[in-house]
Length: 92
Image 1 (tube, one colour):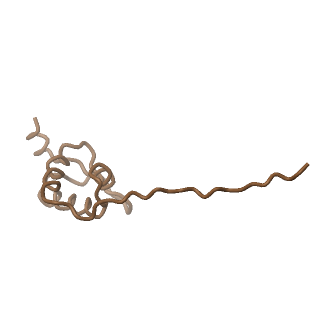
Image 2 (tube, helix red, strand yellow):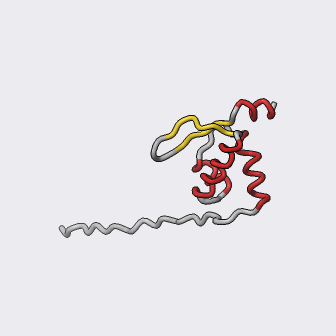
Image 3 (tube, rainbow, N blue to C red):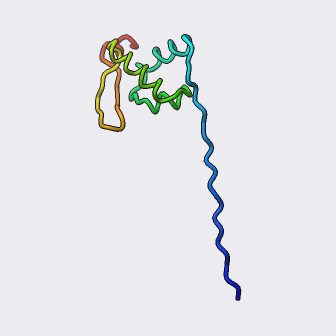
């Protein structure tokens, strides 16, 4: 009997290229739709609109300063936001 040769094939990881710059039209649609979400995280926004997480964090901080969303929970890795009561009432 011969020995069985084990060979490992390298795993191919496909990198997704996300947009670095966003135009004013996309930014305005993002700012309108984010307060309608139940749970807001930079990762969710990045995946939904195909933008980088750093840009998503920047947009979230701007909305937090405007008072449209509020911070619910945070730790060193992630921050979770929800819409404020004012924006919830405007939707209805």
